[in-house]
Length: 295
Image (tube, rainbow, N blue to C red; front, side):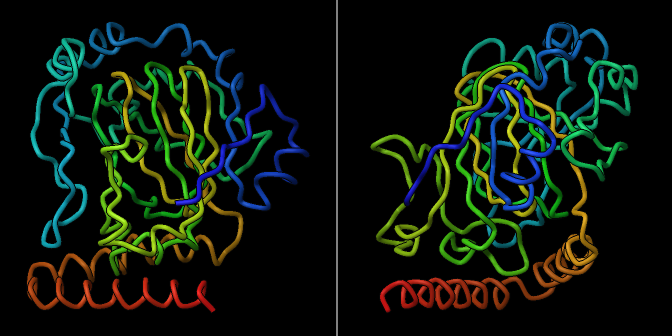
């Protein structure tokens, strides 16, 4: 993989953001955007445990989903308080995915402001909290609705790997899914993946590598592939904004209601045929990418 650092700024004007990052679809870390929010000092594990500790949440482990499993299927369930106790006691490779804490504690909305000076189209009903124990992993994927994301880290550090959507075939995207067939776990270590012998096109994938620290906000343009590893136990919030173009919105709707439905039905009705079809398709598209580069 050919990896580059992500630009970092303390703050940025609307004009500079739109010209240099939003329009060219380039990621950015803004280090001071969230530090004026009450949430930056107020939100903590103890505070969350106090207000939503009794709510049951789905937990996800580090095992990559197989070819037959519908996406977003939880591996276990606990109350949020039990989960917090677990990840605070030491490394725990469990994370919470797409927990809308604001449904249970709507007062939290008052603890931050929507950065509409940077972009519009925020889906204000669905700010999402993401939490993970030390060593937990969010495997390589892109967000199915193709929204722009402002991802603010409040506690703990994350290592993040990013790729443009157009790199999808070098990343061995599973057809009709938002996931990569390749495993990027611990990609930054000598003993980590990916396996270039098994997935040779990955050698040519060009992306970004960064560590996101508490208080920092990562702008991920629509459709960006991302893989995240929790260096420490921590939590973050994602604010989503729909694409401004009608075609961008339409692609997101298709992914949500067309693509995902087809995949779910075929996984249930013809799992072996569907799995073999995907493997053949993935391999062919990756080889085509290698040929393009070689020529």
